Image: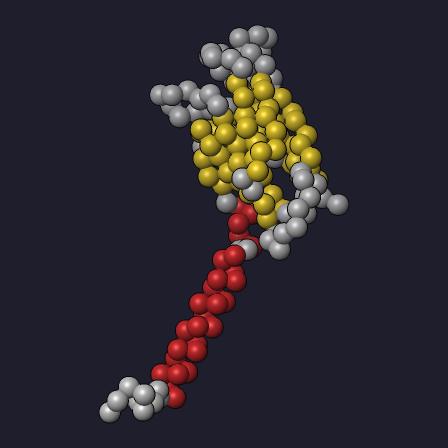
Length: 159
């Protein structure tokens, strides 16, 4: 039997169609999964300082997600340890686009446990996704420990 005259059985056609539907549904779901809001990368586990404040150590780069309709976010960061070089800079990006640089005061003066609270307006962008990725890149981090700065609770504003 030549290949042109060979017919596909209805069962094989049904299986192929079902497989295509499953792949398409998975692609749509994974394009904007609802659980992405809880994903982070590049952070140590949550800890609590002596005053009861929750924080996470950053590594060289950390990522988290905010709702795509957020108009601003507030980050709390601090150097915590007295170590050079100074200044310690944190490059903030949204969806791989530069947003701002947070420069921490010298940890050698007056108190490295003082939080720097920065409100950052988020650019409005057209997006079909529910969340946007925020990346923090710490330009200085303690080499032997892979620790950067403390990041406190993140707050965001929505319309």
